[in-house]
Length: 349
Image 1 (tube, rainbow, N blue to C red):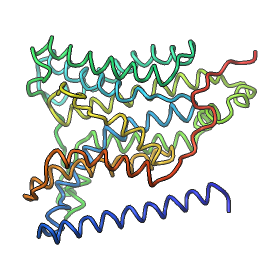
Image 2 (image 1 turned 30 degrees about the horizontal axis):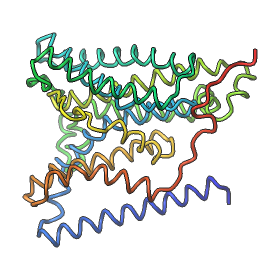
Image 3 (image 1 turned 90 degrees about the horizontal axis):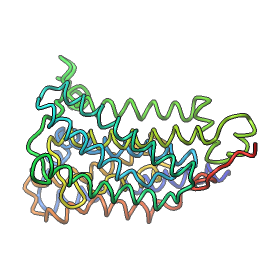
Image 4 (image 1 turned 45 degrees about the horizontal axis):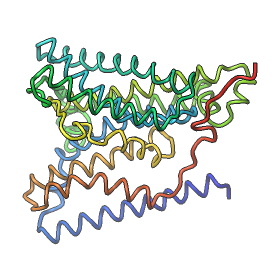
């Protein structure tokens, strides 16, 4: 049995154990609080889970692309913050509340994130800056800049109510029991996330460019020998990772409708969770999205418990996603990183 097969089998086993643990937790809740399971696993909860998972999934897909090519973009959290504050500032400045303006704010957030990531990529690839230090710097700058800009715009670190993304319903199909409200009465940003995840998987595993990305992280010398510019591939993936993180921050803002700059800002660790998600998913976009769905569900339980009057501390419930991260990192085992992650590359020519 090959090592890859053994690891896949082990992951399936651990995934099964995680599912059993979730069922056991649900059973405890049903017995302890006398709440029927169907009151917890409602259509509203599932929709909320998808919306909460979308920003994490987008950032995770971007991060895994960069790391697959050999660059560890630890600045995902910071770029998500920049995406969120850019989207909020754009909505505030245009002074309108139509869905077109929400889309405009999202495009602006992606554009600003790509521009910032361009400078970040130059530091990492051309000037060989330490990837951990540079990524942490992006995070710290985002933590300081976003509340500062919010204070300039609104006089406080929290914005007033802004336009948010509406859900769109497909006539007739949305009336299908259970499936209809989840699939056909959904935020277009959730659908966009699904498209990004599937497209990212296809490009990475079914196209020549995807093989170049994997080679840039595993054996850059061989890729260079084949006549492919390794650093050009890495620039592209780092820019993509920044774009996806910025899009994730904008999606978070578009669903919330308000920017919150207190504490770790409204991003609140989702960029770090995105890194865990793609490690959990073994650098597979679909696996990363499923991991994001898990973390989104844990976060959504906080609201769901309040809805069904389960008396659990809100602060305790707010820790669930982070407890989930610790459990994943502890139980899931070591993920094999690309061989050349963090190693700058210079062509021999």
